[in-house]
Length: 628
Image: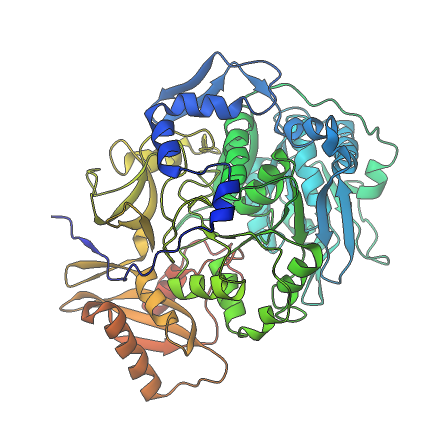
């Protein structure tokens, strides 16, 4: 018999949206809108798709041959056209599209017209290399505007981009280039991180030494006296674009034309190349950006992600540009040169929508409330969280230091889903720590291992019907795609455990493989971590299960203390007693280890499996996404 997934966390308070914000939101009655969207999802998505530009209409909204989906069949479109041409042909032509701030304070601003010109020049430069529709281009760049330009230029002419985060090592970069069979790599000479200069070009040189498909390497030069280009394969970015026409017609592409491959690490084995397409992905990212963040023409939208991750693809580049938004994007860390870095940018640029991660929030918590208190954050209207479940303590801190009036959109989604699937809207009452309810048109549920819906309690998070922005396959590995749909009958299985409360609100509890089984009870690690972080001395925690003779598994916690607190036997006892009080005896860690850092991916997620492998003396598997 399947053990229950215990939910020990208290659900806490309910925060109602400010009346003024609700009155101005695109969606003012979630229950009514959701009911209508689920009664006829195809009609709902058809209506959303018609808000965008299509060169020719579709004859079929959805073709669903389980588990393979095709959306907007017969329709032709181009996501780059919808991000640029649509606005350039409107009063938004001279509106600011992108504000970029470098680590050293350098600023570059692109209007829609200027971004359009740069993307067209880059698209023509790509064509000059003989690249054809369907060819793959690897983009290995730091967080600079050329990253956005290159992505949109590839999309414009039907090339498939594969953006690789610029912190990856040469072996990790090589494996992704080989899998995609890229013909071109676009890189930079250097990146900057906490005032250190990180040489990127030597990493590319090492990676492509054994990549026979790579024909050319384009290099963005950031250092005035940087190393010279060393082979016939290499082209200077500026030279490459010089003389190219600022006019390049966007290709009219079938809606199912692949747009990009994005590699996400698996628990074991090689990274998975998730494939997204122009049509459905465009529709999903467009409408989630619009409704979740209530994005209006006058907003300044700041997402702290990097386009090397899916959040950067969907909610820095495509979603906001599809909506004609003004995007602020900044190179560098949140606490460099000081912990006021992001708060300063919010004040300076009048940011109204701020989308960040629980990891970043906890990092900033470590430095106290005086830092955000130094800045005028009154321009903020909507906040967002992404990447992992946000513990109530971090949620409350973020809410408090930004003025206790800005609702937090705690969004749940994945690289594979393309766009946000579970989230509040600005009209929805909030519970700190809960991602609340499914997005419109999304049938999300909590089920047992047989796929039976759980009315209230813990189980597995699933999506029961296809949605436009879903991945179409895993590149070169369709069998791996099938696993998402064959694990639980009739459902897309996200791999996360989740609790549904009495109001139908969803509380994500971490990965299914991050569940600890103590004496027949299944406990989500996120809940125990949340309880630990709610202690005044703790800034961050990670929890794993270890084998135990009688209980099956026991809980071990790794804890980072706030400045001013030190490790003592009394401290460890205090932490165990705190968890006992918060969650009960079953969740108390048998072991607590005080550490100075935790293994994380470069997108900020804690790698619990690495901690567990190290603890048990096992192979940690694919660690190419590890930050250190």
